[in-house]
Image (cartoon, rainbow, N blue to C red):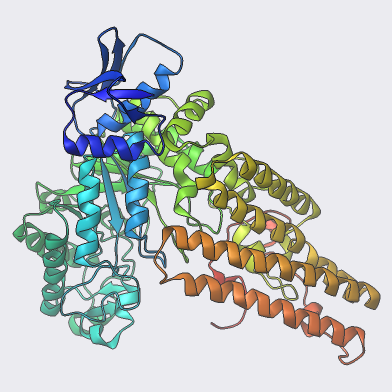
Length: 623
């Protein structure tokens, strides 16, 4: 479609030209006149005099531009107005669990988020930003430099999107605290030492660095999941104290430092609940909250209630009610499930969004953020969860996530099929666990990494899973052929993983059965099947490396290569063991003498279950 841009600034025109890579548009003097117009509500109009994009905030322009192109495909004259449910819709992109997005990738996804209508992006950086004078902080982790931050910040600003720093000022600092350099400010595990002046000197440098990196004076200060707070060096120095008192003292010090740099902080809310309930965050009933907690909170601090799991709307209501006993400055964080293994849990992301959205609306929540965590190695590509981002955008602006609506909008914003992207997550569900599946169940990780001879999850596999995974691989091939070139690699990588899993799924069980039945010829035949798997694994390794390079800096890929390389070595060794036994060099294969036990107890036998981390999958031994 050709447009003549009437009152667009130079920056506006630059954004228009860059979005032409996704939208069917171009600038031309003979094109449809297109004006920008400030209004109370965003919308787009097509009349005889030309087209108009209405917006109340700059980030809305690009969503309405996409809607305009979408409607012009079928209508000559129309008027469309939207009323966003939230004043702010943001995403949080994990840049700390191995994968650190390249500046090019951040700029690339910014364009897609702009077309969806997002207003902010948080880059979650535990130690993946450089601090002047602290060479160990972010060492060999791909830490962002000041120049990289400013480049990403300036680009997001073009689209009216705020790039908000997201750091940790209490826990989740294991990569930093591994270094002896920081022993003096370590309490226990991954937690900073509260009530220690050196700790606050260091936190001050965190804020000083970020204040020079990004224009935003909002900041996420973390403070979540500090389960062992006060039980390490703090206990040795001060004796046991009420841990809520420690938390509140630390909170006050951090807030004072943040405010000294002009920041308006936000933080995860869970520690205020966990310390009051002996570890629980999600409770069935409203909590009796100590009023002193709310009185301690600064007037400009926002608490983030995060919930990626709950399917029942009433449970969100109760959690919001508990939060309101502390403060009325509440934001909500939902989840785009990419933290359970190499494929997204798309169906669960989809199911959990609607009740969360309904509760947010009923409880008057105006600030919502969708998180894309990369726990346990960042094995899943970021772009695989684009459907979750798109769904939340449509819930915000249109209060709709019907399949036909999502398919149309997703194709406009990404050029791809919504259904195809959803099916990237098919391997996360199994015949006994149909979509959306049980919370957190994603068998891909344990099926991929478990050992062929001593598989700790062999009690959870069955032939129906193998057949299902073969169907998944075929479907990925079909979607790859139909996908735009930009997205083919996602379906290619997931297809190669699905093929490997289909071949590997039952093989460990069949090897053990042949061994126990004394079928040496059958064991030799299994060697041939392992050789086939090795070739499939080589393809997976190549595809994963290519996929990683499209999104992330090189740092962190080494972990995935070592995990997959370990699987490759174990396959080689399995062939040697089976061949040696079949030829009489070994009297027994001890690893096949063990009876497969259900990982989570007898009641889970034969069912797909939650994948633990890699080191708990590959062996029952020490690590």
